[in-house]
Each structure stands twice: as C-alpha cells, then as structure tokens.
Length: 157
Image (cartoon, rainbow, N blue to C red; front, side, top):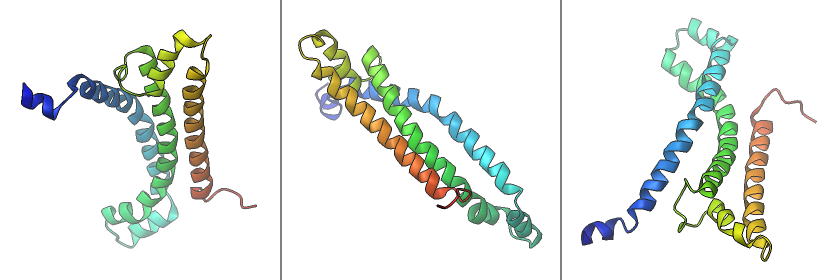
C-alpha cells in the first residue's frame, strides 16, 4: 500500500481527471469528423486535385500535399472553439460536483464553493466567473483571427 500511495498520492483525483477527459472527448470528436469529412469532400473535387490525378500522382501524395494542408485550416479554427467549449464543460461539471474532486483547484469548484458567500463576499464568485469569461472569449477571438488568416476567400481590405 505504501508504494501505491507514493506513485499515486490521490488515485481518486486521477480517476476523476480521466473520466472528465473521456467525457469531454466523447462529446467533442464529432465536429472534427464532420469538418474534416466536409472539407476533404470539397477539396478532392477541385481542379488542382483532378489535375494531379491525371498527371499520375499517387493518392497518398495528393492527400499529403494538396488536401491535408487545405483541411488543417478549418480544423485549427474548430480546435480553438472546442477549447473554449471544454473550459465551459469542465467548469460546469465541477460546479455540479461531477467533475474534478472538490479539493482540486478548478473554476467550477471555486464557483460552487463561493455560493454560500454570495452575500458577504461576492468577489469569490465574480473573479472565477470573470476568468472563465475572459478565457473563453480569448479563445473565441483567437479562433476568429485564425479563420480570417487562413480563409483564402476572405476579402482583403
């Protein structure tokens, strides 16, 4: 028992983190699959892909050199938006008591613990709430900037 405690001082917290990661991942992979599939279907019918096929370029090379770089842009934008969603999901689950253990620092745990002090010390809820808002808004702005930078159809000023 002593060796196990040294390797995993809080096994319950480790399991809770694993469950939280699995829960966010299981709900978050679908948009990636839809985005990659849709972008790949659009790209594979473009003229430069058809020209490469006619020239005899191997399919894996067409995929690596032509399709993949054009699919990565939308995936990167989606990733920034999904990080924001994951932050909100983690905070929500921790607030409800089904996320990370209450002894682990988390914005959701901070909000949950601040409920009993709302009248006497409202900043205990305002500060983590503002941090969540700032983090999510920042990731959304990064995603919007990436979309503007990576979308070749955007009109230049």
